[in-house]
Amino acid sequence: MSDAWLPEPSTANAPFFEGARDRILRLQCCEDCGSWTFPVKDRCQRCGGTNIEWRDASGAGTLYSYGMLHRVYHPRHEGRLPLILANIDLAEGIRIPSNLVGISPADVRIGMALTVDFETLPDGAVIPVFRPAD
Image 1: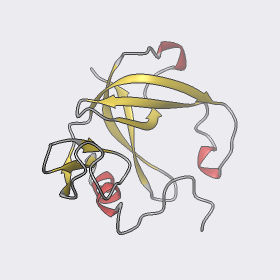
Image 2: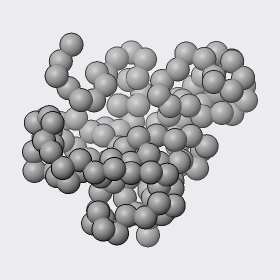
Image 3: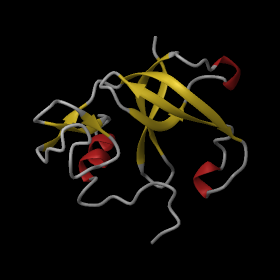
Image 4: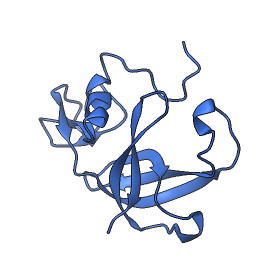
């Protein structure tokens, strides 16, 4: 186990991290009922099916909630504070956690339209983040 604050890439979540490196938000979707899911699951949370595939998500979302990180808790936080930690309701019908970028904390509003972007961290890891939609 490392001191990373992101999930370690594994066989189960590799498509998510590969998509991020390609600047694509890739998530699981049930082929039986069309329900999207996050985080990685072996079974659909809606219908119980196991026919789960990885698909490219739209990247469109709405801000559900947010908080601010003002202290460095991990070396990846250095030079990035304050971090805006957010829960985003995606157009696909699921809520995911991420960071908001490209906006002043004073301008953040619940319900604002967001779009996915990608941030390459100093160690080379790429993560999906969200910014205000134009």
